[in-house]
Length: 263
Image 1: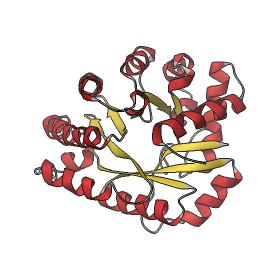
Image 2: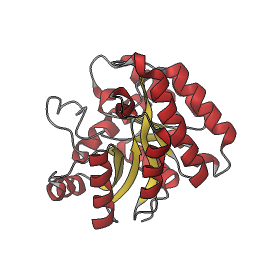
Image 3: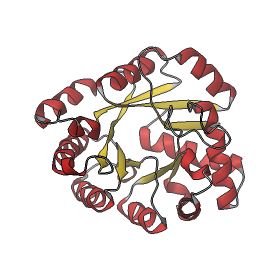
């Protein structure tokens, strides 16, 4: 049985069909991740309506800064704070830095990330972090988060959809971050990512789909969904020299520990 630690929903999605296919493929729980008004709303709805199957995270992701909407970070943080007591909320996320398309908004992205990191510290909630072409700044801010963290050591958070190399993976583990692998690890040109996947210690390993993005081989070109999570697990089992069942057992236990998922 698997836990999909990172998938996105939007209002109007066929949640019933997606859920049925996921359960049929051995997925016992899904973390519906926010990051925008619509994704926050959909995640909260799923966690409220199907609490045994879904947990939720809420936040405002770097896209808000990239589009010039992060001018009032304190107001955005307060909007996140107002959602944290909703049923099934287990983390602050998705938050992070992405300099690929809008490097000129780095300062705004960092301000938005910093405000939500502070909120996570205040509430003792883990963070779900995105990082793309921003490794140095991401690591710097996460190190600062670790220094200020006063809660359970293993609940600092997760770097989702990891695409770095083995050296970055080791740095994240040293900080105390879980590392989550998506369908990218199955891609033909992802040799360096598979090398990183081979060295992450069991106790810091997670898996995800990032639905509806990044469908794994052999489903590339289709919208992704949690039912495809087993392909990620199969790839990790191969590169780590273990069984798929062991990947399922380890990553499910880690997901439950990080997000306080029960059942």
